[in-house]
Image 1 (tube, rainbow, N blue to C red):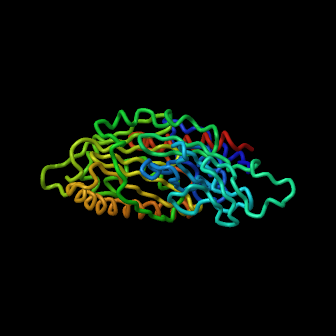
Image 2: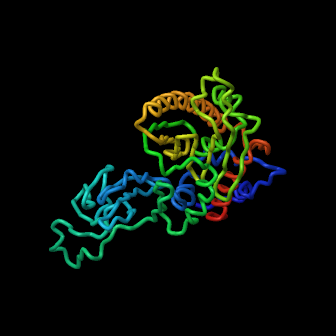
Image 3: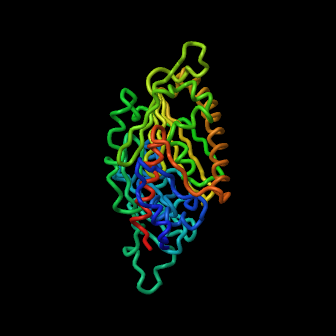
Length: 366
């Protein structure tokens, strides 16, 4: 697909002295999602698993990156491998669920692959002329680990993961992500384009108006944003406001909010972490996957904290869903083309949208 001159004009980098949003059509036209799958989701690192899911030989986790199904495995040599979850016979899946298996066996016709992706056996193919199992291998994806989290990339030339995530582990000290253990997952499906949800996360401008409870927890006056090449870092001191603050279970210290291009969010607070993965399931529908991690998971104090966190997170998420779906209605209305951004509060939005502009401009032309 090519982009016309008018759209390409909108994709020129927006400067702070005339900062404006992406055009509405990038949120409402289904044809652009195919471009985004190719140029954004399949070309960048995606968080896919946690080390605890892949500790032993034969452990496997399935996921999708853009349009490409993958299976991540720990092989007999203890190495992490990621393969296209697409059999070389007739495109059946070689894994259909997370678990542990000694091989990868297609659920369609039983072709069987080793944990290194090599075809080991193909039922009844021995009489087929010019067929050799040694000529068939599952395509590989890139896989890397960071602070206990497993990332994959379908394309072979994403920016280095260490560069994408540089400085995060240091900035959040004394919090140590490697010490955290998975607790539970929540998923939401929202009637909006995935970028609407991303834009909403990237600024604290809406906090006093959309999140009255969260605004009491955070110090809005000190809420700030720092930009790196591949992420925006929002942070705020935790404002406990004394013992009468019902949200004082968040503890003392800072709230750290990282938005990592293209679709990962890390919400880091003392003793816990939420990872949010934002996945388009259509041009106007988005799945948000929340995974919760805690230190000292079995303690009574942490169990109480999990219950409090979950109740409060549900409240904040309901508020975000409401406003994001209303924004999508506004974008669909035809009344809106683009708007100006507030450079005191929306530098993260501009940063993210300029990355979108660059990727689409670099990959597609008139």
